[in-house]
Image 1 (tube, rainbow, N blue to C red):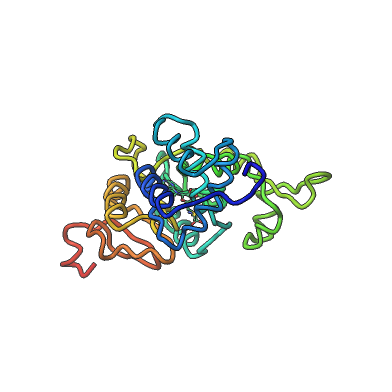
Image 2: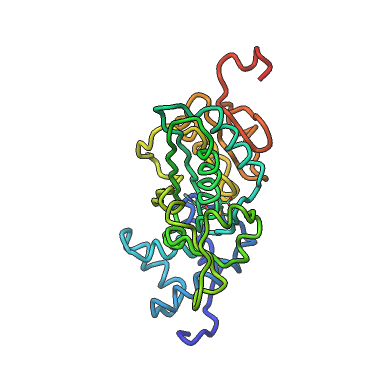
Length: 284
Ligand SMILES: C[S@@+](CC[C@H](N)C(=O)[O-])C[C@H]1O[C@@H](n2cnc3c(N)ncnc32)[C@H](O)[C@@H]1O
């Protein structure tokens, strides 16, 4: 058992896992995820020295404040990401910043499911490049995720060299340090880039969102796919309230929100802006 032999994982255990993760963070697990849930959680059951999944799930349910809840959540999130993933959004970001940055004002961006940091650091490099041009103003970049493991990794800003294949040579030279000695094969974002991102834990399905101000651009990419439609609609309503009037919401390639809300209208590939009352008359 503690030695890695199979643990019993019943249909009812999976049902409980599904309800518990849905309640906490909105992730909807389909039946096809049964094996994935087993594989990821069995390690946690064993590491707690427990004899069965039901003991583990009982332990969580009997202690709402248990630290193990975070381990349970971290185990069930999917964190796939890369630098400059869905590259077109970084061109859109750069152009939006060019048009909307203003002397004396702060251009604000939020990466709302930032995973291990590749997305917010790609945003940071894009903005730093834009700020090499005259235009004034400053920028602020927030990055959040529910998973505390990925937030820790992100804050370090260290990656295998192969992770940066979509980063141009010019950006690699300007914004990364190469590891030497025991760090051979690794790269690290320079202090300037790490300092440009403020990471924090944030649950997108939290009932009440803290006041984090208004943004020029919100990245909410490849996370909505884990939520059911009512949850997506609720998050979109809250995102709409966090955007400046000309702000942009950028979603992942398979996330279509057209039938979920009338708060947004499309304005380019998986890019959305706030719907304004007279959009329809204007054919928006
Ligand atoms: C597949 S990654 C997407 C990363 C990045 N946005 C991208 O497109 O490359 C999805 C991320 O969403 C996070 N996530 C899942 N549920 C969440 C929630 N309720 N609140 C905030 N983040 C969540 C996961 O921890 C994971 O890091």
